[in-house]
Image (cartoon, rainbow, N blue to C red; front, side):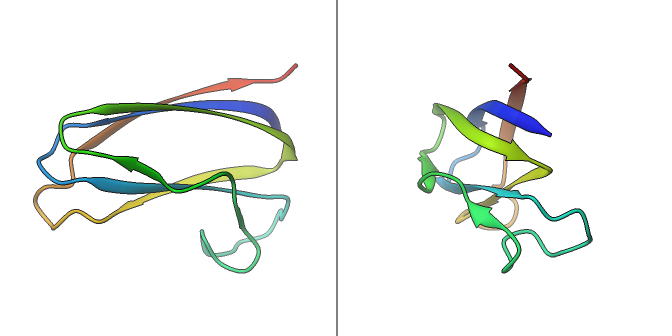
Length: 87
């Protein structure tokens, strides 16, 4: 269970990345981004060789997941860091 999340994405590649953050209260197995998951916030676009910091405050979540897309195979170089705060 988490209450507040902070993400930082650093694009180390040459192509932009479209990042989506999802959360769920489901305790079972399900596909990330599927009907049991909700996207939290807007899609985050991280251009080539740049960074993006996104802080998200939520109600309690059981799981959180992140997807990145938009870059061609071989240029998917996206570094990340996540800070979880339970207040």
